[in-house]
Image 1 (spheres, rainbow, N blue to C red):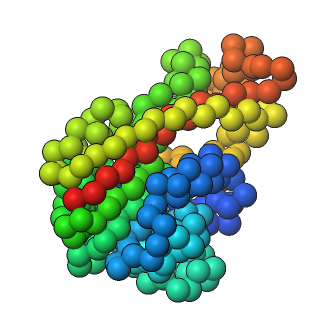
Image 2 (cartoon, rainbow, N blue to C red):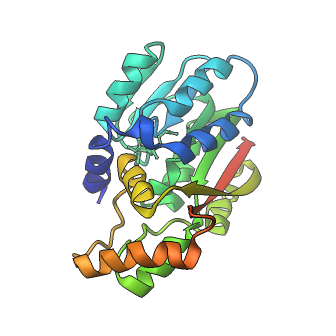
Length: 246
Ligand SMILES: C[S@@+](CC[C@H](N)C(=O)[O-])C[C@H]1O[C@@H](n2cnc3c(N)ncnc32)[C@H](O)[C@@H]1O
């Protein structure tokens, strides 16, 4: 399954930056939770092309940046050369050390075994160290989930439940704060939304089965009919911001 996720993200290296509208908004908000001064050892998980890394560097200094998708990481490395880039799995960290900050934006929902890998990840945080993550949670793409049941097109990746993620962090012996925000972005058409979604590489649903042209057409037709607002197509995203210290 990881190989599918890696492949989907690597294929998006040319389109990610022009497609990641929601990820930019989320990165900006997550950056507000970061400490305001240079940190002694920063680890970023799920760097991608560096959308959040730029903000992280400005506030906290250089970081060790880990991502499973080498093509995206190479792009970040060209833009922000001050960081150390390591291609690897955030669920089985290829780095060691007591970090004073571990962070990552829009990435942890891709973890396949968060109940094991999040406690493992937080072991790399030194005493007093801080963490800050944004995670896409259940409730995202609510419109598409409904339409998938009606048309068979548009299967949605199973996103974590916010309460499950909070419980995992609380079980790690760290102090935890949470904030959940819902965003609704409006697109000119369903095709524009689907193109942008594909452009970010977030295409792996884990339950893809071949869909017919008829179900695709039905999806394009019903989306604006059921959810359209003033000629625009709304898409809901639900984001958990989870922060705290050890
Ligand atoms: C939606 S992108 C977010 C990228 C960037 N943080 C941003 O805000 O634009 C999710 C990133 O998580 C990475 N990712 C997914 N699973 C991962 C894993 N197990 N370990 C490390 N990175 C992972 C993907 O390769 C991708 O770059």
